[in-house]
Image 1 (cartoon, rainbow, N blue to C red):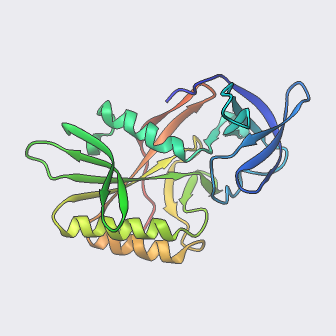
Image 2: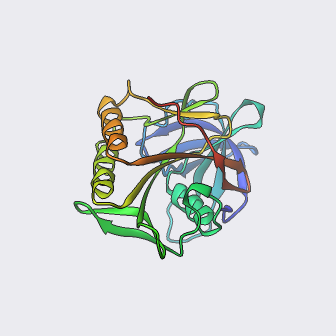
Length: 235
């Protein structure tokens, strides 16, 4: 997934009202950027952080910048837009670049299932069970090399797990796919202390036959693509 326009570096001044951030550009101008991440963004929204913004000239948009990346020491990046996760995963699935999910003939997105929900991707093909794939964007890291999900309580995430479990019980293949939008992560775990209910729902889903996969990413100011699998450090 390439960014539509070249990103520009900036310094974060503050994030507020969840969807807004003030930043200072390299030339000293202060701008307000849209924040597409409604979560806590724990560890990513510290004033002074080096961030990357995407400019737009769409007259319909009130804000002319959107916050896309956080840059860390050592040249590492985190992608802060969860809306990008499905685009990144879709590109990888269409290219058969996710070995555990390769070989399907048909990919459909946002298919209705469960109780008033939509599955991110439904894969199908001759001689294969229908595969329901739910994607979650992972950005939290509280220990070197370890990414965690979630960064805040997510009742919606627990609901998705129970619906995946129902699909597995019905004989379908059900997959929880964690896309780690951090280049400094070597493994993925659950932040059970942040959301114990999600951790319980995850364990119940695994027991019901739901598979769990994690993918890393390659991130630059030009774009984000899926990388290889990451180990899941969960019980």
